[in-house]
Image: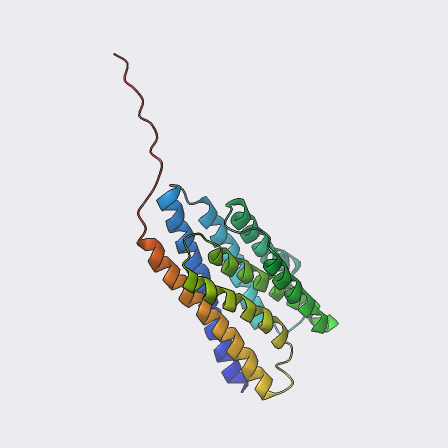
Length: 216
């Protein structure tokens, strides 16, 4: 059962990295079509890389103690992602996003003291993914169908944030935990592919700078 769990979590980790990559491609394409620059997408990529480090550390570390520098870098991920999305106007604070953040943070109440350090890092990575999913969901170019898939995916990860502490109680809870996690990541990636396909069909619209008049 442990081997099955590790395989399932590895698949989910790969899907998470793919979802981060797809959002970077989507934001880069949008900026090229409408702005002619790629500043926000670069910040998203940096934040996503730090997030992926968090998932790798969380999956490989069995102890509760992590290097302070590593923990700081991983927790910096959601800050960079949040800043880039809010500064670009893609995402803004809403009651739903605030509720999701609150519920995920409260899940730390189920953590034992010796695991707290590691779980705070995992929490930062999970919050980063919630930001990325909602950032894609609030994009004006995202169709209504993918928006619904992204909403379900984000709430699925909120449920996962609590179920992951119950997986040790029984095999049934472990299977439920894995199922919710995998379904949420599959919905996220599927919606991202649909959004990318939709955006690729949009025409490029960049303001043309007025030409300078040549003096006679």
